[in-house]
Amino acid sequence: MAATDDAFEEIDFEDDDDLDDGAPERAKQDADAERTPSVVVDDVHVRYRVFGGRKRVSGPEMGRIRAMFNRSRRHVGAVTEVHAVRGVSFVAHHGESIGIIGRNGAGKSTLLRAIAGLMPTSSGAVYVAGTSSLLGVNAALVSSLTGERNVMIGGLALGLTPAQVRERFDDIVEFAGIGDFIDLPMKAYSSGMAARLRFAISTAAVPDVLMIDEALATGDAEFRERSAKKIEEIRGHAGTVFLVSHSMRSIERMCDRAIWIEQGQVVADGPAREITAEYRKATKKG
Amino acid sequence: MTSAERGGTAAGGPSELAQLAARSGLKKVGSRPGLPEYVRTLWARRHFLWVLSTSRSYSRNQNNYLGQLWSVLSPLTLAAVYYLVFGLLLDTRAGTTNYPGFLTIGVFIFMAIAASMTAGSTAVTSNITMVRALDFPRAVLPLSVALSEMLTLLPAIGVMIVIVLLTGEPITVTWLLLPVALVLILLFSAGCAMIAARVVVAARDLRNLIPVAIRLLRYVSGVFFSIEAYAGRFEWGFVLEYQPVAVYLTLMRSVLLQDVAVDPTMWLTGLAWAVVLFLVGFVVFWSAEEKYGRD
Image (tube, rainbow over all chains, first blue to last red; front, side, top):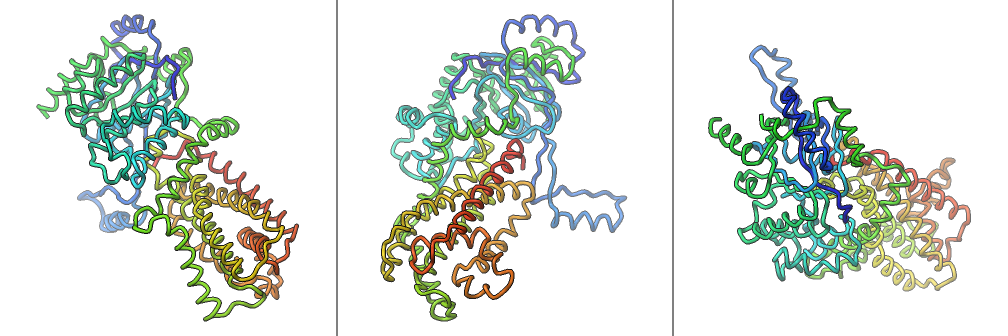
């Protein structure tokens, strides 16, 4: 998966509401022109179906028969379409790390998956330079297999050759810091250990675009330190890093830009400190 | 708003962003590659396919004390049960001279094909976390199901050969055809797994019909009786004889048992089914490549 060294990003975001800011935007655009974009997200919408449940629809004016029909729909044909991302656009450039913030359920993870090409967009398009890798809390590999097998499977799935995986195996295990547990099935791992191993695997092949979905939250302080270093290293290779986190402190520490998403739409996009400050204010009030 | 300072591509709308992407040489994410390109990326991940298949097949028996011994014990006990029921209690031995051999081959091969179909139908839906975490050609999933069932079948083939030898069959030249028959069965199972996986992703309710279809197949494929002896008297008996699963059972029997003749028509039919199912399955699965992972 290695790398055309040309992936970095910076995010230029445009939400419909924000488009009036003509003049300053133009100026900034000139500055951006020198840098090559690594990720372009163009008016992306993501809808997906969820089986097994249905939102309750009820209203005082609803007739009895309709109410009954709606109730029965929770048992037969219980499929709901979730419109998780609603028209997000931005441009990201090489060498940048971007924090994505927002409340639970705002569509952050879905957006990352769409950028990684793991979830199809229902309209709009995502363009990426080079390879991308998503690291998420629920990116479980095969839990009945040992850590060692999972390192192999994960590495090969990322496009490494068996020889490359074997070559990096010791580094991966050492970075994950899980010691002898590497020979036990992953179902025996604590959530922190599993997250460490996934992080180690995902970063074994240096991607051009790395997306991290809350994965650092489960690690202990020492591991967070190590992963922060790894992220720096990837940015140093002129890669782009996206980080979804609820910890404003880690966003401020590791990112230079932030995008705030609410209900699947971009609320604000800019320097990390400013956006997190705005977000803090808004959430305190709310 | 801060976005102003940070800037954005101007407000020209989607096409402008798309142009920017094209100028900078970015690739569109999640679009379905062409068929040759797809085959190429799949080939590049062949090690992934192999490791996934062997690991799956191995891990199946790892969660108990006897471990890998079960890969031999399970087929043995199964053969004993079938012999008790169909050989002794119901007696469907008509038209066969070596019923234990006939039955063992039927049961083992059918089990492998049926398992490929069952597991293949959920190959994408049950690996959704992997689909949403890693980017690889999705055809790896149904293919690895078929391959790992085939690997699980190998110890059973060993058991089968021992039973066949114990029942007095001599080793003949036709045994050389054994790997050929296994390859045909693998291709056929892989085709079925890809079709089933695609169908269940599109309409997951159909998953509930797969066990029904498999039960039907079990009774019409001559797993524990000779189609020729029982259905031969019907005019449409040939339909039963030439449907793919029955064909593969006959092929395996003609390889290992003396009283079943090696029939070139059967082999050609088996080859045709394997190639057609595999190619159709591959194209059918590929045609929805960009949609997997949506639900």
